[in-house]
Image (cartoon, rainbow, N blue to C red; front, side, top):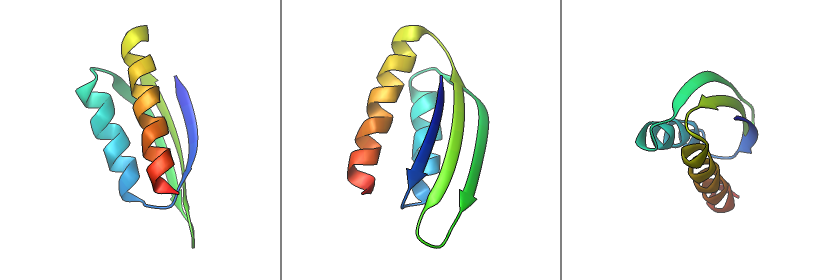
Length: 67
C-alpha cells in the first residue's frame, strides 16, 4: 500500500510509522519534505491485507484531526 499525504503537523509522520508497527505492517519506504505550512510525505507499507486496511483507516483518522 502506498500513501501520499499532506500533513500540517510533522509529528504525524512518526505517528503513522508507529501505527504501522502496531498493526504488524512493515514500512518499506518513507519520504518526507517539510515546507512552510505543511509536510508532504510518501509512505509504502507491506503486510496482510486486513492489517493494511485497518492501517489505512487509522491514517484517514489522523488526517481528519490534522486539518
